[in-house]
Image (cartoon, rainbow, N blue to C red; front, side, top):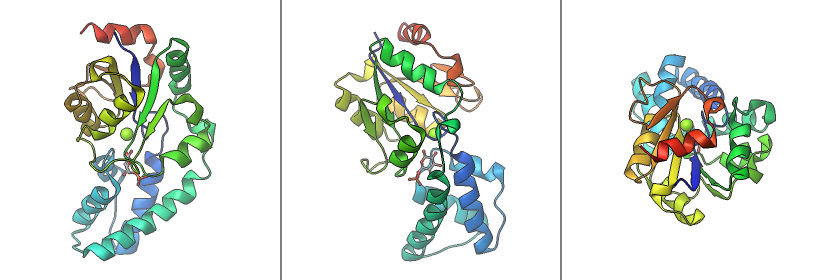
Length: 217
Ligand code: BG6
Ligand code: MG
C-alpha cells in the first residue's frame, strides 16, 4: 500500500511560476529581447542554470560561464524579493487540505523540489510543519528527470519507492518519479502529463482514498 506522498513545490503547492516569469522577463528585457509567457512554459521544472540556457537560446545570446552565473544571481535576487512577500493566500487550491488529509491518515509527507528557494517559500506560506522530510535544490546534485530528489526523499522517510506517490506539474518530474520506481499524479493537463498514473487539474481533486486506488494500478 501507499505509505508516503512526495510533493513538488512550484506549480503543485504554490503558484510561483508567475514570479519566475517576471524575473526572467526582466532579465531578457535588460539583455534586449522579449520573453513571452508561452516561452516561460519551457522553464517549468527546469533548474535555474538550465532555465538561463533556454532563455539565452531564445534571445540568440551566447555567454561565458562567469557571466551566466552573474545573470542567474541577478534573476534570483529579483525572484527572492517577490517570494519574501508571499503568504498563505498563495497556496494552490486544495493543497493544504490534501496535506492535512495525508497526515491524518498516517501517510508520510516529503518535499521534492529543484528550487534552492524552497525553504523561504515553505516558511512564508506556513507549509513547513506539514513535512517529515524536505529535499530541495540545495541538497541534490542532479536535476529532474534524474530521480535523485525523490529517491533521497523516500530514503529519508524510511519507505520504499513502490510505497510512494509523487505529485508533479512538470513532465521532467513525472519522468523522475518513474525512474525512481514510484507512482505519480500529474497536476495540470493530461496532454503534457500523460505518462502519470493519474492526472488531476488541482490537488482539490485528490483524496487519500483516491491515492490507494492508484496503488492497485
Ligand atoms: C523549479 C521551478 O521548481 O525550481 C523552476 O519549476 C525553477 O522554474 C527551479 O527554475 C529552480 O528554482 P530556484 O528557486 O532554485 O531558482
Ligand atoms: Mg513544478
